[in-house]
Length: 145
Image (tube, helix red, strand yellow):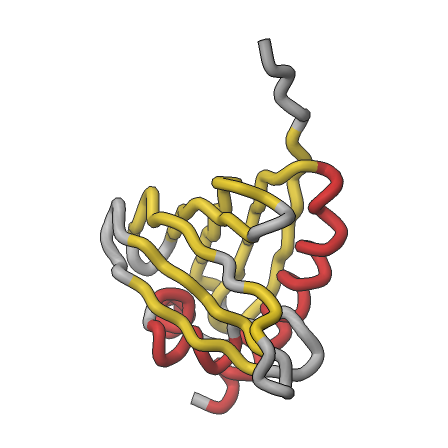
């Protein structure tokens, strides 16, 4: 019998100055995802998304020298616009079919974003860095759109 490793819970929370509808569209529309969804200091992304339960997504993250750095991908499990998004996350060499849940709640100033990523403990630190950078980029993106 194969022993499964215990999962760690990575959590990121942000107060965003945009309404939940705007945040949800930034999280799910490929042309918007491509503008903020890369977890490196410099670079860019190309996103694909088939936004439906069972639909697939892929975010190809490139370094500034056009070298592919990572291409996380997965499947949408739950879609409840504009408040909840649940999807699998596979990042080659790190995790396979881990679960990401994003909850959006309207606030007086905009939206409270709560991201939860269930993944193996050994992948938590690298993903925390990437998600933190992505959350900062999302915050900046939402201020300019």
